[in-house]
Amino acid sequence: TTLLPFIEQMPKAELHLHIEGSLEPEMVFALACRNGLQLPYPDVASLRQAYDFSNLQEFLDVYYAGMAVLRTRQDFYDLTWAYLQRAQQERIVHVEIFFDPQAHLERGIPLATQIDGIHAALEDGQRQLGISFRLILSFLRHLSEESAFQTLEQAMPYLNRIDGFGLDSSEVGHPPEKFARLFARCRQLGFKICVHAGEEGPPDYVQQAVNLLQVDRIDHGNRALEDEALLVQLAARQIPLTLCPLSNLKLHVVQQLQQHPLLKLLQRGLLVTINSDDPAYFGGYLSANYRALLEHLPISREQLRQLACNSFTASWLPAEDKAVWI
Ligand code: HPA
Ligand code: ZN
Image (cartoon, rainbow, N blue to C red; front, top):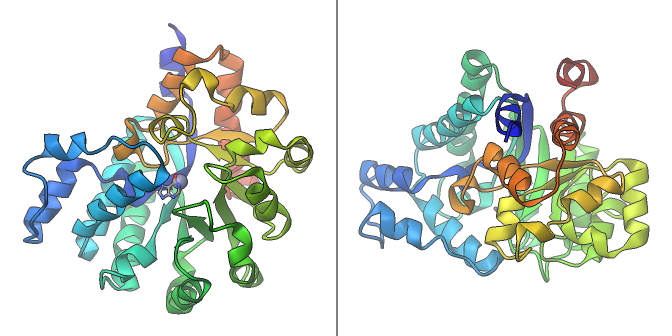
């Protein structure tokens, strides 16, 4: 249809992207070779075949195994640069990306190595590709509050290159309230905060994120749809939700895209955005997510435009920079 070029050409922001989730199988092999590492897969095709998940945890096991090839500053730079080149091709003009420092610290990779590589690529992307950025340090919720506080302490010398804090990994059993003191500290330090909530976890986790943690944004948030009072609150306060349709399909959060809650949430007046989450694992970058919606939902040109506008409204850009794109 005629809306395909429209999707490609719209200026877009991406607000929910784990940089480690943009690690393509080809790069896994290239970095394993460069770093002298043995992989438990004979070739790229057999690794890609392992990208078949029945839930979040099955994905996370493969995701943490894959990122083990990231060792040097250059590895983190190359990973980030590859994503930014893809982003530019899709007319993404602003990115707010997550990284998972604890997953690398556990493997003995210093925080400086991680941030130096990722941030240098983001700076080059701003200069050479015209893509503005924010960098979000995401804590792993399956680890302890103490581990998160230690990571925050270690990050102190680098906070001038961090824009906000997030929370990801295994959701059920690790509610936002487990990290209430941590995020209070992050907010006290003057940072934006967002947490994954309501992907697999119940609507109560979204409620905790909003009212206890006082997040600036919810990542996923699909299951907010099950709580009428919560929907009213999210709409009234225009708290953004970063939805990830292809991720939801691959992790069986929805059984079919036809059942995706996007249009219901949009019609209820929530500030929802479209994002790719972990594009190397979920079968598509941002444009592919928009195309999948167009193919499977009765979505209009005006709604597509609204979603792209929402991505800037929900971003952490200052108002004058948002105004350039909205
Ligand atoms: N959910 C939780 N943790 C994650 C995700 C996700 O979608 N992607 C990477 N870590
Ligand atoms: Zn995510």
